[in-house]
Length: 417
Image (cartoon, rainbow, N blue to C red):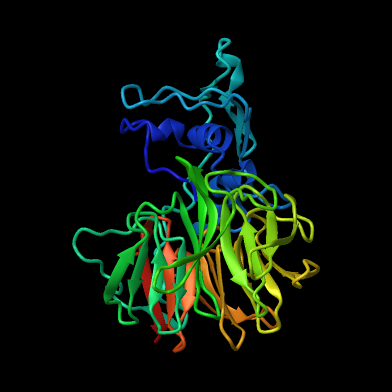
């Protein structure tokens, strides 16, 4: 979710420039987000977080304030020395059907100025989860405490090995942090090996798979296979090179390994495809393109096999899970799990899905029929893993508060009440 607590009156540049900065810098210039994803994070996602039903979406019956902007020219001009300077590239803004940003006042600058009309109102100032939001789970206090000198960054990936060791993949150094089930720190490793840590999985044979989602200084944009003692045994992708060929990725997000050893990579934040390799890392095929039809993707973010060998793909920005056979044939899709960032499927097909963008919840259901058995709104998680006892471990990337609970840049363990 993109939002700001800065204001023009308290002399902070993000008061006037948060959203133009996202659209100009992070979408157009740096290409960290797609335009549809950024818009959703600034509209329907915060509306859902504040439980404002029927708001933030352009659809019949909904209430949506409208901003018209030029994506090629929008620029945030606010600074700490002049935090009130307004952006360029916003052409018209309507709130409640009334014009509140007047482009005729731009005087040739390509910008505009607010009008005197103030039709907006405060709909909700925050959300403190009620007891019912927790579902049947409770958070284990102070689980996963780090020793002095270490800290978590964003934690997009979680996994568990056969010995019950819990691995968190974090955007800090060192990025791989291991705990036992009680939360005791065991070790940390991987320093300076990855540019942008993303996915982490332990496969059925005990190998550890890691995805590095960006390129910098000649490294990154690769998928790595390690033994559990840290020996590198396979690398997919071309080091430091972005692309959409058989030997390149552009922001790979996750890995799933089939029973026969075939390797599937979701690729990912920039590309919109699933890439299949044989057990030796030889390219077999790729499928998918940017779009919202069956077999198309908009940020295929997380993948996992069910007991039948079907591949479930968390198609995050399309707010659905798509289901495929191992040749890429579309089988079904489910939309009841929101905007999936992380998926875990237990041997009995218990399905765990985390969504921090849309429904802002942890779902527990079934991979057999897509039913939902439980929902918990205590976490804003991106990564999820579950141990043999049914304890749930999540990694969070979004900083903030849910009531008195701090979210983001941390790991959490949930157990049954």
